[in-house]
Image (cartoon, rainbow, N blue to C red):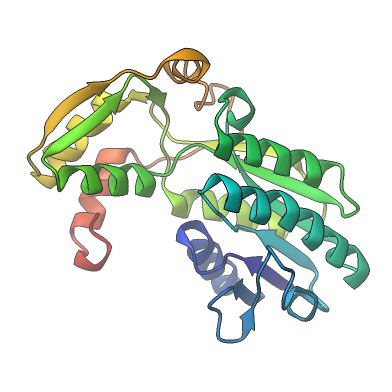
Length: 255
């Protein structure tokens, strides 16, 4: 199969690219900095040529800033799906976040809106909804620890390795039929405080945990485990501690 991966150089996209390439598929990596297929979802530049003659498109694009998220995830999805329809793409595989519709902040609202656009769009679709990545938590803790503090909200999370999510995405992308929504979650539900203690124990980094209150509906959602998936279709097998230990052995990927 010829499969285009939008955001194919990102945290998840690079794993998807490697997984599908190892399975023998012809993979096109689409991103703003791609040497072969430079694209811009917010303007549509390069998209038509990049997805031409592709059997499937995996959208692993991302943008965290609220205004940019709307341009890339919402408007960009509309633009991408229209071009896929015109190009004869048979399967659109979107990436989303477990519980995004339950946490009322800008980025999650954009992801929920993106899901609606994909599910109501003109191309047969599947959506792989994942919980937070181990990589994201490790990156956030490492960044905070530079200031010798670890801000800890009251939240329950179920983090998962991006590589394990990528294998599910690859399964879906190379399948003969669309799958609808598929939820992927990590093997453990942990509080943010437990994740921070685990990170410190494995990495040996010293920082002062500081509880951070999250008020209102967002705080209630996080405390209730809105970003976890008790009924996930696929559970990862690598706990956060094991992922940290494995990556600590590879300096180039140490958080």
